[in-house]
Amino acid sequence: MDAVTSSPRRWWALVAIVLSVLTVGFDTTILNVALPTLATDLNAGSDDLQWIVNAYVLVFAGLLLPMGALGDRYGRKRLLMLGLGLFAASSLVAVFAQDAAQVIAARALMGVGGAILTPLTMAVLPVLFDDHGRGRAISLLTMGMGIGLPLGPIIGGYLLEHFWWGSIFVINVPVALIALVAVAFLVPESRATTPKRVDLWGAALSTSGLILLVYGVIEAPTRGWTNPGVLTALTAGAALLAVFVLVERRSESPMIDLRLFRKPRFAWGTAAGTLASFALFGVLFILPQYLQAVRGNDALGVGLRLLPLIAGLFVGAPLGERIARFTATRLPVAAGLFIGAAGLALGARTEVGSGYGMVATWLAIAGLGIGLAITPAMDAVLGSLPRDEAGSGTAITMTFRQVAGALGVALLGSLTNAVYRGQVPDAAKRSVSAGVANAATAVAARTAFVEAMTAVLLVCAAIAVAGAILTALLLPNARKARGGEQSANELARVA
Image 1 (spheres, rainbow, N blue to C red):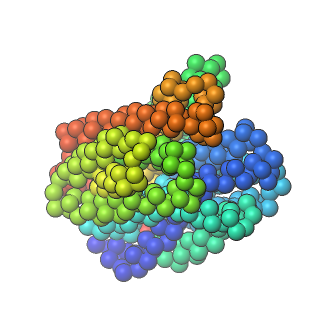
Image 2: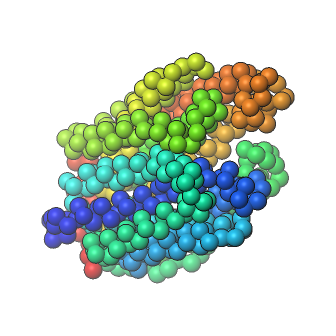
Image 3: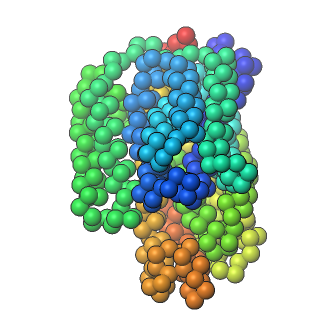
């Protein structure tokens, strides 16, 4: 055990890292609350609003892989500080924006900052914590990510009620700057012992391929999956990513080591984390619409009613870490996915007249299961990575989770529209909000949307069950895999 992983300061360093992920975490949900206000105050059309959201998502997804690799080469602490500074600066640009185009540009810059922070906050954990403490650190980091989900609507609702629209971006600045100072003083620098050369071809192919693929996925629910532009983007993105894989396999110094997928703990830990995230994305996609349109809650009310989900995560994340410490990793991961699926299946029984107690119950169960699964799954991923490749390896996992999330939202959005529009009159087909606002179609719109929510939750539950079965069969026990991995970890240098 080295001086870093035994120092009490590592827990204070973890606080800095949690602040970093919290900065990114509540920014997305806080923006969703503000879109109607931005439409009015900036005279932004629906296309402008879509790009205010998507500019961040596209840049973020496209840059995850190269940013993880750059952190391994040039220093993870250095890039974390750069990401936090960029996030704070771009938030200030958004605060003083005069029109929608300037907000879109600022959001794209935030995407760069988010792409730096997301893989590297996780990648520094093996530097700070040994095998024994890493699981606990991941559980705390998971809870830090989770708390941002309800904070966005709660803080955003309060700020928009008392201040102007720019206040939703102002809040990012002090949080990011505090995190930056904390990282500067508390997090040790770390980088690969034998840095690879910068893989420009790999970076260009992965970034362009992911941007095109995610763009096609985002546009598909509104323009249609057979739209020529959507098909072109999806095909071109998939082709570029296929070329990227071929280039990386033949490169002497690849940006990411695809041989990592030969490690069952990395491959199946990534798969389990992705499926747990898919279940979470499914809930966060459908439930706010239900709470607002069917139950009539405002943004602040939605945030408060998401708290049982976060409470479940807060219980499940540390519990998963403790169980994994004494048993096979597959036990809490598979059990968590099964429990999450049970919560989602219970949620599928929600009816138009169901009280909030029903919703709170299945939310808490789903959150418990997701938290139980995701902490040991991510610990399996980090435990299988040589520290030299902690940034690029974590970026692979995070990229899978983000792309799966975007694809999941697109597919679930298409499913929601198909079920909803198939059961309402023409006057209510445009959206559930429009249907509920019309007294003549309100009842039909609410009933149809609940049917759509049932379909979405059942699909998410089925995917979680499939993940639980595969995890139970294929995710190896940590004790069998740890010896070789720990010797690789000893190659690391802490600067």
